[in-house]
Image (cartoon, rainbow, N blue to C red):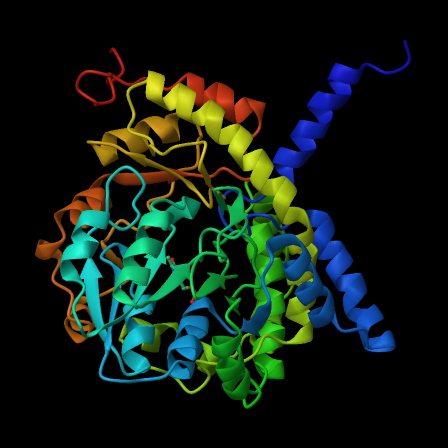
Length: 449
Ligand SMILES: Cc1ncc(COP(=O)(O)O)c(C=O)c1O
């Protein structure tokens, strides 16, 4: 026989594993970067717009009617809140386990933030608590599908309808996830998604606002038309960072990346600085302002065409990628449950997660991290604060008191997360199988001397 197919398959898996970064740029593939660079020059010659293709795809695939491509997920929420009619209802309810940028966006838009605790099994809003905190001042509920797991949607929908308040879906982690065989984004009055580096698909920083409500769509349109595009300097910087992050965060390419950097530094120490300075303008980094709870002047902008191209390429991969993530998640759940780890619990007949990451709750994070490291399993601690990336000042500004939300606090101290993208191959699953974990005490068994 000329070909040994199982050998070929192994080779294919090795190539896939070596071609995928472990956390960032979830669905971005090496070939996408290549196609992107070709399309960049092709687009400038023929002027073909990706916006129409994205809109057509989102309508056909996800059933999203009004689509707005923006500079970030937070900007999408901000634009939505600025576009809806403002009356005496000025409170927006959000989960107490979220990223600081969400209460910031609500506050910037002139609303009060109110928090609701989460449920431990899916990290989504706790329905009973939600019912208790709605008042006549509530304008909307933001339902966040944390880690890409959409739960309790019908319940939130009912509560919102009953109280005549808006239902906003935070699908930042959940693009491609489904509930009752419908894509998330189709249940609320509006939804927003994030294309930041750690999300399902990435434009380094970017977001999408969608609605199927034509009245809301019309009022967003009016504001959207006035927006300017992210400027050329920032656009150039984002493209550079997408490519750089891909290689830098890659399990294997990072080695080549480091050697390459070392080599450039060796032949000309100033060259690497010059390259970086050409692409990166430190004045364009608004992250610090955001973490201090202050809105910067480029907060709300439209996503330029070049970044839309990279978005379009990944959108086409998404369905297949989410399917794969779900297949892997079943194996992970089975192995980790058997070993006594606490994994998400949901009704798999209704909930089809996108699995932005695979969350696990452990009793002793330090021991667990050590054990995962021993087996070279990359582990993240995403959302290890209840109000992620907040400091005392921003907590105060956003009226957040973590003592009031015991489940969010407890989850944040016990959470760890695993990648579940293409870097997870058979060898990764084998390593998971080799984890040593004591079911009874939920503590990793130390090595025998
Ligand atoms: C749950 C959640 N919602 C919304 C956002 C905001 O997305 P972006 O960073 O694109 O503004 C984030 C950001 O990380 C998030 O984690």
